[in-house]
Amino acid sequence: MDRHLLLESLRAGRLGFDLVVIGGGITGAGVAREAAGSGLRTLLVEQKDFAWGTSSRSSKMVHGGLRYLASGHLGLTRNAARERERLMKEAPGLVEPLPFLMPHFKGHFPGPRLFQALLTLYDRLAGTNTHRKYSPADTQQWVPGLTDEGLQATSRFTDAVTDDARLVQRLITEARRDGAICLNYVTATSVERDGQGSVCGLKLAPEGPPGTEEILVNTRQVINATGAWADRLQKQSGTDNPLSIRPLRGSHLVIPWQSLPVTCAVSLLHPEDKRPVFAFPWAGTTVLGTTDLEHRGDLNREPAITPAEVDYLLQIARRLFPGSPLTARDVLSTWAGVRPVVTAGEGKAPSKENREHVIRQDRGFISIAGGKLTTFRQMARQALAMALPESRAATLRPDEHPVFRPAPPAPKPENITAITWRRLGGYYGPDRQNLLQEGRLEEITGTGTLWAELEWACRHEQVLHLDDLMLRRSRLGLVLPNGGAGVLSALRTRCQALLGWDDERWLKEQDRYLTLYQEAYQLPHQKEEQGA
Image 1 (cartoon, rainbow, N blue to C red):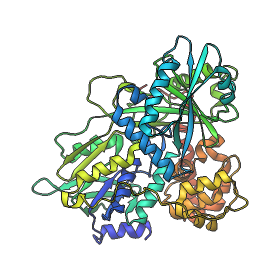
Image 2: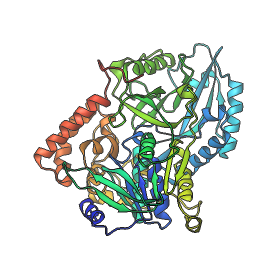
Image 3: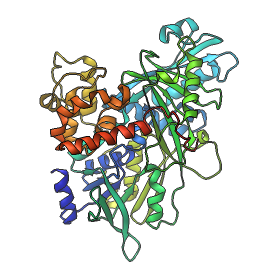
Image 4: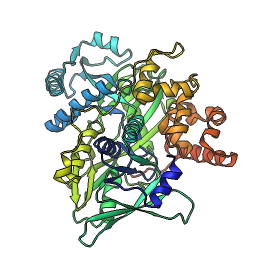
């Protein structure tokens, strides 16, 4: 059923739900996937695009949280490390192992002996054994150009990397296969309660012209997975004990791989605040990140990097790779995301805040916030167990059941590389063959993306705006110069008809996208600081 018909069915009251999930990021998508897979009639709504918020602008790391282990959060680290192993096994091509190297310099904390001891515990929690110690000479084999001034040794361990927006999209697809209805650009405006104060419904406002009628959906259970917005919806719903959300901004620089060629993640504690900062390969580029600052901007606007953050990240790059000093002219694009950290309000430094998730229940209204991308499945199952009465909680699908259906075995087409073939299996699972049959297999120059992927997104992945296609269904806006402006003409030829847009709509969407890119995804130039 297409979007228009689904909205009409909701408006007519023809669809009933056991559960409505608000929020289409990694947590909400995980809840919808587990709920639908357990046979619950599930609706998910997202006020903007799927993964629009934090879940398309994270650091792309699927990791156990080594620094959380160093802070004493043993349980959080163990759960995350084991979920990391599970995701790499279930979704190869989408969640991939990535070696991490930590150089140790004389007089700098931590030293190699202490760090190796920490890595021994880290591997033990994950049930793996991947850590090693390298001499300065061996380090140069892994990371040519890394500074050797004062270098004592290097520690290696393994975590994982992903495309976070595609991970969310894959979860949405899996939820839909099991019967969930998932709609982007639908805002939850109010929670309805009965005379006893229990949830009895939810009012929704789909994106549309002014005066578009709201929709009332009947449900007894609502899970609020809106991330940085979670406390706002709680307060609106009349919750007595709302979460206290501290929005923290993490920003990144995207560098052409040729300007900073790394094949593994390289980390160093920043001299300013002793936070770990990484340079790592991603989507054919090199990424530098991340910062950790108070975000005081409007949460409904795209966050953007500030000049101070640019300087902060370039400083660590120059320290690590003095032979090829980076400047702002080397930057291809940027992104910034807002972490929804649950705080106790004790005035901690941003990097000292606890990253564990918190769940609150109030008569059918469950709110979940905090946590890590890696542990989305566990958070989803905990929220569902709390939302459902005891008689229904036992119906949750077994914990050991896979999150993702695998791509069926099939011969690789000759004109597709092995790397692309593996990635398509991870991104699309059982839909890989259909995607290849429906679309063009040529690569978009300068990327590993196929035109078939954009055509598939236009047909099947609820693209309502051009930025959905350029920044989340694909990453062309991040990995191509000028936000991919050079491919927009070819994109129009291939995709305008698939999207059902007339010429006026296309030009409007193009202007919207390019303006958005300039405001939030390129270097700030003379922009004012956003509360850094």
